Image (cartoon, rainbow, N blue to C red; front, side):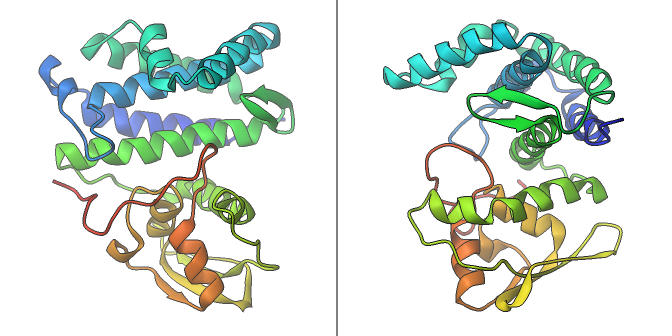
Length: 264
């Protein structure tokens, strides 16, 4: 049994690492278009939650204690950022090196895992496949603001399918988290993969969404405004979904405003 999504997580991490590999120490202090986070803040965030996911697989008891601290901090009105910054001491190039070294080691361990193994999380448990896909999604999504800030274009590959599937699977959640009724069917998706392959999901009776798969991934991860993509959306169900899409857990979050996220 193997977990190929672990290789995709690693490839996503390596793509981001290549973008910041030559960054000078001061470069990690550059603010991005995401909540004013710096490039260093992005790497702290990714490293912290990669470590947490890895802990859920290697030491369930230690992870339960970790999850309790996270829950207590959040209930007391504290933010995740304070936890992240307190737990991750490295900064600048040392942070970059620690993050990629852990991601590489994690991917090697996870590749041999049972994809259906249940792992605890801060919230409902999930399968190993879902957990490592979430780590790839976070790396891709937060990597977007780094690539944008550095004025670089990421070369997309068909590993983005994992994020597309996550976006489809969170169709119901995208409505629930925003207090909207969940439609009975997912609109027909006709998405062009980076390789040129056509990926289809859903039903035409619920509307239609077509265009680049990377643009769909950008909308469901809220790294681009729908209006700033090449997606073509037809029908009220498809329109409501794409204007509220949120493939990540937590509180309801509004998508970025048109023109607010772009490659500099």
